[in-house]
Amino acid sequence: MIDPDTIARVMAGPLGGAILLNQLDELFIDVNYLARRLHRRSATAVSAALLRRVEPKRTAILLPAWREEDVIERMLELNVSRIDFPRDRYVFFCGTYQNDPATQARVDRAAARGWPVRKVVVPHAGPTSKADCLNWIYQGVVLHERERGTRFDILLMHDAEDVIHPLALRLYSLLVPKHEFVQTPVFSLPLDASQVVAGTYIDEFAEHHLKELPVRQAIGGLIPSAGVGSAFERRAFEQIALAHAQQPFDPASLTEDYEIGLRFRLARRRTHFACYRIAADPDDPEAPARDDPIATREYFPDRFQASVRQRSRWILGISLQTWESAGWQGPAAVRYCLWRDRKAVLTNALLALSYALLAYVVVRVWTAGMTGASWSPARIVPAGGAIQALLLVNLAGFLLRVGVKMGFVGRLYGARLATLCLPRLLVANVISLAATARAVVTYLRHLVTGEPLRWVKTSHAFPSAEALAGGDAQAAGADDRGRAARSDGQRVIPLVREARRT
Image (tube, rainbow, N blue to C red; front, top):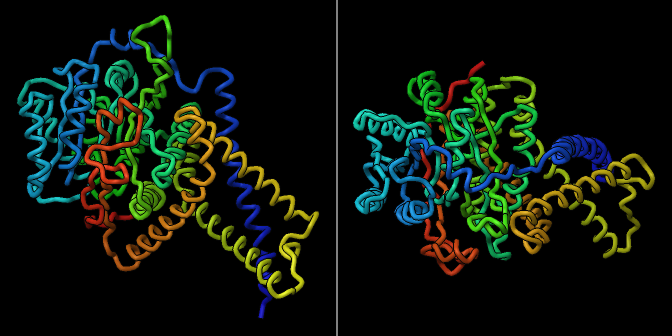
């Protein structure tokens, strides 16, 4: 029988080497970001006065809504009251289903109040995939244009939980059509420190949207759509739709937002990540008291299982399904970004092996202490050897990762939430491991049995006006944990299996 210590020792070297390669990949992004910061700030400053002088372009806001009766009316009310944009220049197109009368009633009530809202009813029972709903909303936009004899300039994607920045529509009017796809940052709304699961999204989105996406923009890589705050030039979107049988969104996709961004990039459309901020200016009475990023804010899942389901869908759609359907297309910078988006399965496997090796060492040390046996971690990692040096380098890389994450979180949320990045990172790792296991098992079952992949609805919460004004985490219709009532997050929707493309 092979000695377990030998197995652990043999594992340690290759595992450490693979982790080091991943650390170097992350360091490449860090170095590019720092080089960019030497020449300019990470977020371009723009004045509110400038944005208000921009001619407001006609904007259609695509808003899919299945079982969103708890949040959609409140979302429409608050955003309509906050958006600094002429009401005759934008319309919310709310996609609903025949068998969802509660959501339809909320949308009807919003429209009856004179808000710029139009209901689109999907001509079959729901739920279907979000992509299917978005395709029907797009058809509703086209029908509206024909009825009114007008044409929108911009199509903008949002969800029923989004808090839209008051000046975001003016920013899109400034940037489109110079850019045919514009993505603005997405950040979590402020949370209480006790909301650890939801807090993992604070860390992830702060770093990804303040560091990685600006670097991707600089190197000419892939800017994925986040599904919210995604603005498309009308003519370019129409051409993408024509190229895909009037279905700009793939109905079989689990991550339709990511795929539409990829479609635009592979079609060589002009894509842009718009990381702008309204700069604080004590001499301007209309300027904010502190720098204000033009970004979409929202709540993310704050329960472990809900987060696992959502992240599992992301891994399935981005790391596995899109790999199968789109392969490795595009120039080198795009393929590099595809690698970064798809490596989650591999890096989480490395994480699982690392935890297993660490657990083995801890158990061996504990049992040796309990029994008086002679055992030392040097049996796995010899002192002064190459593996120990590799371990120390990887430890330094880990501390750098935590420090970088803390820096970006601190910029958006302050020092208090930044100091909790390390415990949240441990929780995020557990969630990622569970989500990856779920995604891989689901995908293997799909390949072996042909069982269709299933789109899982994410339940939504929306903040009250008091929460936005006060900056706390209390949501409208909240339960005792400060979150809004949720629709059924367990419902799953079968999708058609996507044919493999070469």
